[in-house]
Image (tube, rainbow, N blue to C red):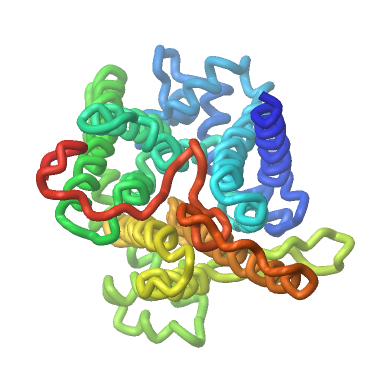
Amino acid sequence: MLRMTRERLAWLAVTVLLALEIRFDVLRLLDPGYKDLFQADSDALVRAEMLDPAPVLLPPLGSRGAEYTSQFGLQGMVMNWLSPGDHLYEAMRMTTALLAAAVLATAVMASRRAWGNRVAAVLLVLLTLSFWTNGFGASTYWQLWTMLLPILVPLLVWPRLGEGRRKWVRGCALVAGLVLLKCLCGYEFISTVLLGSAAAVAFHEFRGRIDRRLLLRLGVVLVAGVAGFALAMALHVGQLLALYGDASVIGERMGERTFSPSSMALALDLARAQDDPLFGWLLGSGDVVGLWLYQMTAYLRAPAVTLPAPTATGFGPGVYGIPIWAFVAVYAALAVEAYRGRRPDAALQRRLAVAGGLGLAGALSWLVLAYGHMINHVHIDAIVFYLPFLPVVFLMIALRTAEVSRRVWAGRGSRAQPPPAAPRPDDPPTARLVPDDLVRFPEVPAVRRNDPSGLPL
């Protein structure tokens, strides 16, 4: 009981500290002007609905006569119901930051229970210094926590869902419900979120190799996520038909955001105006592929984490950071090392490598499938790398850092102390990396083709 109380208090403390950083950027990771205006135009849609909602039961985002009908707008509805006008808008922003912080804090505390304080500390530092979660976390429009839940919740509860078909029925219903919640607050980054859910399940279902069994199970998870997306779309269509008698805006926006953007010429002009000495040559032909490649370099060069720059330091905010491409390189190195199996934690790192690979594929899926959105939203679409590729890489780094630190401290202690007793046959070869009752990540042999547990092959 005492241990549980301490863990809950620690979770609450981490949540509050992260929320304050997300809302007010105490560490000055972002330029103050940039932080204050980050996605102010999108958040204005929520505030406008609170000030002057359409006189219907389920009003869309935006003010009366200027509704934003590209999504169902659940976040605006809830805030409109709870707040008289916009008097509570700032409280809603703080609540949104708290929800995002609670999700991140849950991930940190889960890693602490599973692998210890060192892993949790490194993970907490990297999540706190994350550039894009700091920007998105308090946005009343984007509701970052709804993007993270379909990934984190399956990761934490999958081993607790039972065995066999019961596990898959419960798990698929859970994924579908969480994806539905996210899509009712916007369809953006949906392919990334779907593959992120699959990445969480792959972490538990991976059995040492990528085979037909694993692919089938991940396919089932994706189908469940698509079902949640389809239900949100159906509710959106019903809303538009009830209010306007026409739902054609959905098809128009899908074309605009994918492969039929009307603003490609403008995006090309804006990219050329940057006069990039390194990658500007990609824009020479002015074709679809060249523009995509150029914008892709911008995404990879965007900061994943930035160093804090409080006013007392004299440094400008956001001056020093580590770009996304550097973490892609670190991921590749750790994945290759895990595949070779030369480290004591190789089995765990292989699971993370599979999950990280799916997370990276999810990020790229949006940047490819949502071409129209990608070329026009370089200022926001880098968030896809956090759903969940970068957090997985952060965890891989944290585990490796903890393992190295244990070896270093063990080496120092051995100079002054007698050698430890021989381990028992059931002891792990190094410090405990397998979690306790929260989640279990042991490396297990491949399942036989006639294995009665789980889905049939």
